[in-house]
Image 1 (cartoon, rainbow, N blue to C red):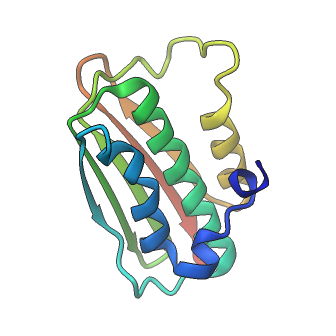
Image 2: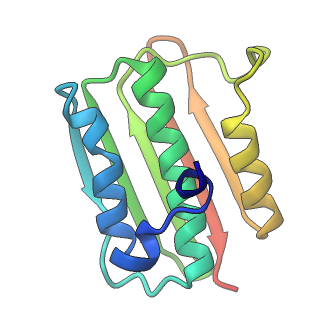
Length: 139
């Protein structure tokens, strides 16, 4: 349980390898997972762990709820920070609908990213897939 809360993967292997391992659960279900996370993002340990947690939650939700055939994970550096996006072509949902009891993962990720000065946005609609995007400042 502790490795779920405090993952070691980004620290020991880097974010690209850690995200690739996260995607294995979807691959075993026949999902085409496309990853574009460069090795040279120059992430701090804190930022790497934060982006890993966003990816982990988005991929967990895609696995449990989305029924996707394709999931794309991208990360890039901008002039002001880093952006990580996880997009799927699954069943989608209405982000404005009330959250089901016990489903707090995405809210926890949003709160954690906000505390770091960033933001998480979720774009989705029934039948239109879902994109979870996190932006985190350089500092």
